[in-house]
Image 1 (spheres, one colour):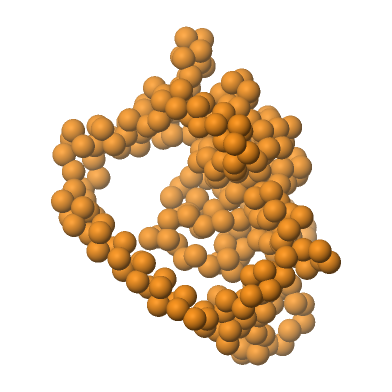
Image 2 (spheres, rainbow, N blue to C red):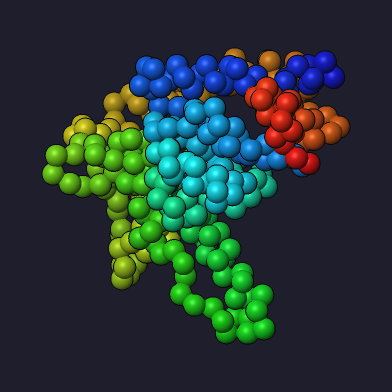
Length: 300
């Protein structure tokens, strides 16, 4: 990648475009998914406050990550009816901060778990649940560990396997605005079912079903999946041509991308000097005009 390519690639999205997209989605009744990170490098970009001031926050929005948001910013999301999606593996792996789903849920925000960047992390909901559970409990326990009593001051874990199961199922459905359609087994909801085998040695004995699912199960333990009553996975394998089609699409995507990647420095190009700081400066430069004029465009 040349210096010019790099400069062009980090220009970001001007605020006028962001505003137009949010307003158009509202007009058409579409769901908006936004990477609302609020922090770029060493520069604070209060995106939630910007959206609130421009009256762009509202229901039908999924704000991904949100790791750097303050409680006041999360309260703005709660008041607007927006939801939050945490991607715990990616957020911890990339150093974005602790997942925010538990704080968001405390404030009444629909909160679910998701996945991001499968090049780095597995698209495995069992992994997400475990990583999120342990990260949040470790964070909550740190104050006790830092006290003079250390481990003697520890109480019960803040989150349980049942809590995590909720965020991975009904919580995620509520974030998508589908809580009345799917996410739990109730009369009148879609027949979306996941049947899990529990005869693996890694799962036995089953003393607490929720603990078995969240703490000890794997994607390979899923035996059958029904979507709207139709079987799409049976005996551990996708039905029909689904597996072959998925492989073809992934391989086809790589065939198209590989020459473009090689032309821009290969799979692991040298990291441009000052990458994160320049991304931060680009984010602040794309702040709303009123924020820049009032000095609210971000702090370093």
